[in-house]
Length: 339
Image (cartoon, rainbow, N blue to C red; front, top):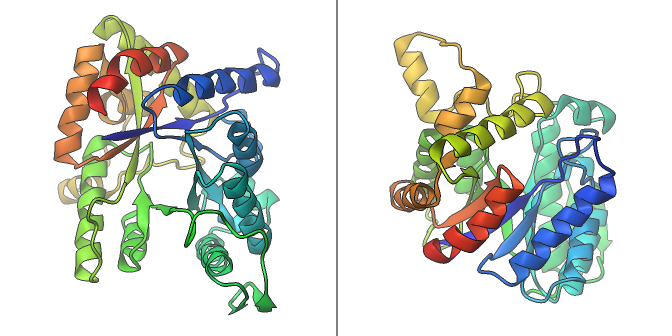
């Protein structure tokens, strides 16, 4: 199993924001000397949940401090960008990192971001996909033209070209069954979200496999990053306390019903509720603790990850540690056992 790290830049306001960045850079240094494959940078705006509005700028900063670690975007929120500018900045990051960029893109779902970036729920998906298409055209052609719903170009040359050829690896964030079907039908590699339950992730992974094969595409051994929250403790009770505290922050700051960060049941969960004709109330914090996060001691977490590796199947874990101590313990005691 490959392992990457999904890096949030959570800020409670109790310390200077520079402290948040310094702590992240300490992680980067530790990851550079470990078995981690990639640091994946989460883009968010207008929230203390993660103060990283520019993943290309942060990625360039990390590129200057590392030689081996790959640098991923998880994700660029395409609808908020001018596509030509996005293609240029990503290319520069690939050049500055000596060909270590993984480009993950997504549409976003935050109503505050939609409002302030002048995007609507009705047009965000089409903007996201058109931008993704334009970036890939810019990377794959010396000059290109594009005539779409939102953008119209003739004979454009985008420089610099990315260092990786034909272009950096491309991943599309896919959470809903509909978005998985669309991405799979076109042969895209997907990444699966942090807020869905393990049961739902298994359903989505199976759906992706089915759609890919029915459209003549091979999943093969391609990396399919799956984000999972992890909480480690010396005892099960200690790990649960870590998970509960972290989940409370996540729900309060970002993943709440107003923003709908995967809290609405999907896939297998949705099918069960529909068949039972019931809408049970779910405490969102307990949901993370019981259905989403991987919680326990070192041996328990290793065992659970190995089970998910075969059951989902999961060949690429995108780790979201629920505390700094979890990150340190995972790096030292779990990572060498699963990679």
